[in-house]
Amino acid sequence: SEPLLMEPLPDLDGRNVLELLRVQFMLSSVLEQVIEEHLLETRDTAETALEFCPLILLEPLASALSKALRVSTEAVVTLVDALTVSNNTIDSRSIWFHPLVRTRTKKGDAVMPAFLPLLSANVYRDVDYWLAKFGLPLKRRGRLFEQQLADSLRLAAQDSEMRDHVVVRNSVELTSEEGSSSEEIDLVLLLDDLVVVGEAKCMKLPVTPVERKNYLETLRGAAAQATRKAAWAERNLSSVAQVLDVAVDRLSELVQPVVISNHSPGVGCELEVPVVDLRLITNYLARPYNSVAIYSSTGYTESKGSSFYNTPEEMARNFKGYIEAPPPLETHRALLKPELVQLPLRSTEQVLFLAYSMDHSIMT
Image (cartoon, rainbow, N blue to C red; front, side, top):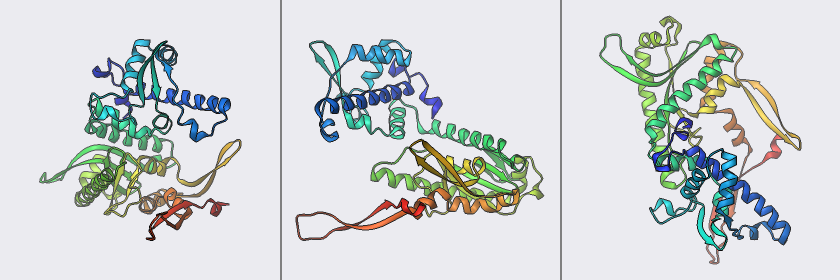
């Protein structure tokens, strides 16, 4: 979505979504400092500090943000206005996306920030909201995601020792030799002799129960598409070989379908085909080994484990196992500690739910 984030928007006086997000992040930094100073002055707890509602004068705020963003103060006011809650539409009443309240003081116009929406902002959710609000549709984002997927794999392959055994093609239309059928395929990836057919899906990050349901339904549909296209590719290997620019006898008869999502929810789901995200499939080429980040007071270091493969043949043979049980996901599953927790109720009825926590002692 990066090109869309920088696209000038007529409804925002030519400003863009990236600038809007930068204003939001800068305001969150200001609030963190405000909380810290408030705690020092009042000796309140962090909880009571969140109830503190400071007024920030608009003129000095716009001047400071103008210097930081290197834009005019008028442009900053436009961006601040977009982040201000209003009654214009139902969406604009949401304080999670419009975390500022405009008011007036004796010293001039001011804004009152809502702490939690600014300090706990979900970047992916904010991007989805603002792109949709300003009419930048998911269809355009989908095409950009397909290109980003292919570019990331090509870059990873260039830096890999297996570069001579990897071919990447994206957004291709394949036609059978006799011309009786065709398929549009988002990604065709060759790993030594293994052909991988990828169905790319660019979706909004699911947050509500309805969104999660629709998100999984979309992934199920993508899995069915990937299965159909992989079966077509197996029947038409000569057409696949042509687009990959390799000899057909180099290709394995089995084609591996996979769904690639722009978000991590759904990775590891038991669908018809494996689901991965952009980072997982790219890391199979860019970082072909298990690793653990070890944090300390001086930062963190990476502890490398076993390699996913050492030869082109292993790269092809081990790919299916990698996408069916991604190592980072399996590491988290191993650390999960289930526990039955009783819901505190005033009635005598007992309600238990299953809670999970991360048991990091396993790694020590």
